[in-house]
Length: 140
Image 1 (tube, rainbow, N blue to C red):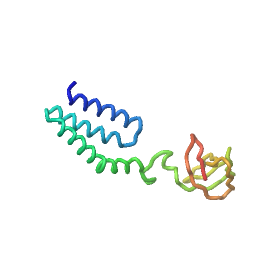
Image 2: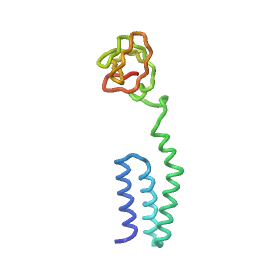
Image 3: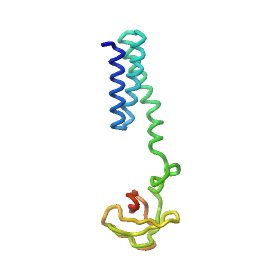
């Protein structure tokens, strides 16, 4: 089997593994394997193939991965939908227990439950939205 094909298979396997793990690590190494496949397809020897693999993988890990990681963890100011509610303060308008309650979030009334399942929050108390589960805000 041709060396470029082996490198290409490695790149595809690593790419699939990245999709399954979403670690942003295996994808960078897959990029290095793809570069090595390109170098091997040009007929360059194994030493240069491994060199291209190492250099491209290193460059992707050092320069691209931090940028991609920052984009995955978007600040609340640019989150949308229900993701934008996480971390926002809310005011309790009907006692919140582990099973039921109501909170006012940005002018809207939401059904709510305590996040830990044990706490109780009284009317007028300030809470923070920890998570949104369906149509209920889990607060703490």
